Amino acid sequence: MIDSEYNLSSLFIIPLSSKYKNMQKIKLGMMGGGIGAFIGDAHRRASRICNDYQLVGGVFDIDFERGKEFAQQQDLDVNRCYATLDSFIEAETALPKTERIEAVSIVTPNMLHYEFASKLLKAGFHVICEKPMTFTIDEALELQKVVKESNLSFALTHTYTGYPMVRQMKEIVKSGALGKIQRVDAQYYQGWINSIIHGTDSRITGIWRLDPKVVGVSSCMGDIGVHAFNLVEFTTGLQIEKVLSDLNSVNDDIQLDLDGTVLLRFPDKVNGVIRSSQVAAGEENNLSIAIYGSKASLKWSQEEPNFLYLLSDSEPTKIYKPAHAYNSQFAEASHVMPSGHPEGIYEALGNIYKGTAKAIRGEEVFEGEFPTVEEGVRGMKFIHKVVESHKEGNIWKEL
Image 1 (cartoon, one colour):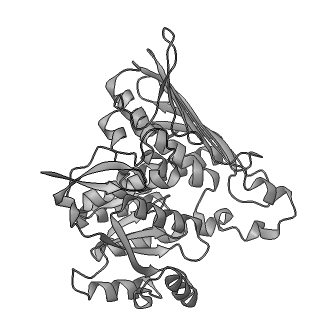
Image 2 (cartoon, helix red, strand yellow):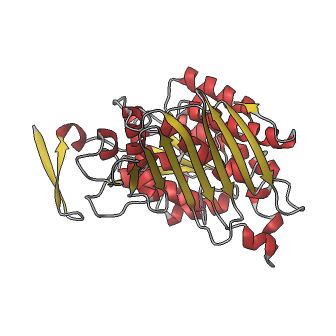
Image 3 (cartoon, one colour):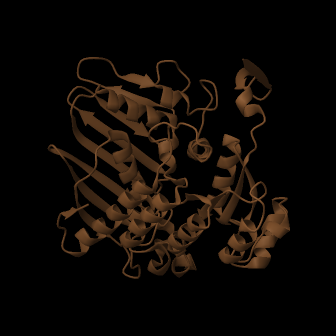
């Protein structure tokens, strides 16, 4: 029997199975993401939007006192705020299973991802991890083994795969409506570093994203280019075989790339390109992708995420939008508002949290409902091979 719950915020009657009415929320921990952390705030909002988690505790800051201050701000039990990862694991695993934290979000700087994820999985916690997944390819391959041996859920937050129209894009490509894919173009342009390196801002040596000891071998490609890479493989269902790159640090005082272009080669004579920049003056978060097929093409942009365009030589352009019956089941399961109500980055990230919650509970999930450790390995190979291609004189490198 189907019951209904009256949702006053949307003024819609929402069917609610009795199976879920008394389902307890997953107890969530967090590593990092304390006072002033944008990405930590985004993860907390996403977990609340999907309504499957309750933040309980964690290690919120390298400074324990600031961590406790954050816990108080969030109205959390300060006794569940820990100084270190090891103290977190020791205390939480000592609790009865009904009380302990079940899943942990890792929103620390990159160099801590592998250590934290590996230890947490081995201790029996499900993991939701920010990208890039690890610091090196070897760490990524080792973490892949740990995930497999743990038999636990591991999600990598390539957030843009959570947008309904990105998921619709994937399903349209899978249906064969585009014919044979012939070319893929993706770009991700931001401008936030431009004013820092050309202005009077003294933070240039203090930005952790520009420090190779913290982020690894790449800034631009490691931070945002890898999102474009992931989006290409997610939507097309194809794996890139080779990359050739030309990177630019722009400023002699900076060790890592801030701008770059990567040529792509797929199987079966399919080519593509990824263009990415953190110094594109005036750009905010301009991620877009176009897939060109023998019958039709698709275009999507993150700054207008509710619009997916289908183009062809023989028919007028079609526009897909969320919350319509013409979309795939996967896309329609990925929006939380009725048609005409804009959704954004928090809802997209919430969809990844929702898919992970389903996996944790042993429910059936859509293919691609949340990025896995395999996508993490692919991303690390992309980042490192792009850097190698540039350093070795712009030569093709196999992924």
